[in-house]
Length: 141
Image 1: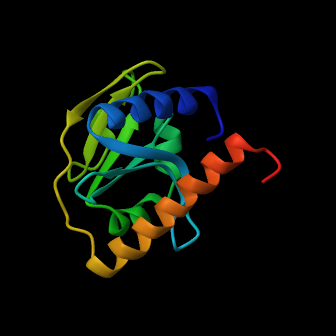
Image 2: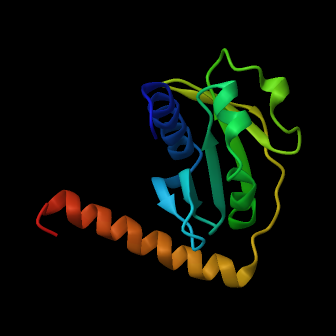
């Protein structure tokens, strides 16, 4: 995430996902090599992806996010409280966040992830989480 606003939003989202029962990762690389801002994996094996938008310009110029929808069960945009939410597509969820907290403004509809993709992505998520933990415990890794 390039700027402080986006990093703050992502931090609030990460906290919210934890409160919602998801284990989260920031900057997770999908099989397509695209990197999502925040992804969460719930106890039931369901994935949520949250695309952080720090400004209306950021949203209007980003053409990558539609590719993320096929890699989750629910998809949200996360924005700050001043973002004109009316500009976001109505078929996706919306989270309003800052550096400390976040709230779901519009729930995301469920779109079940393909079973084969879910299995592969769950393994990738687990390996990525383990690698990050290992690097935090031993920076030489």
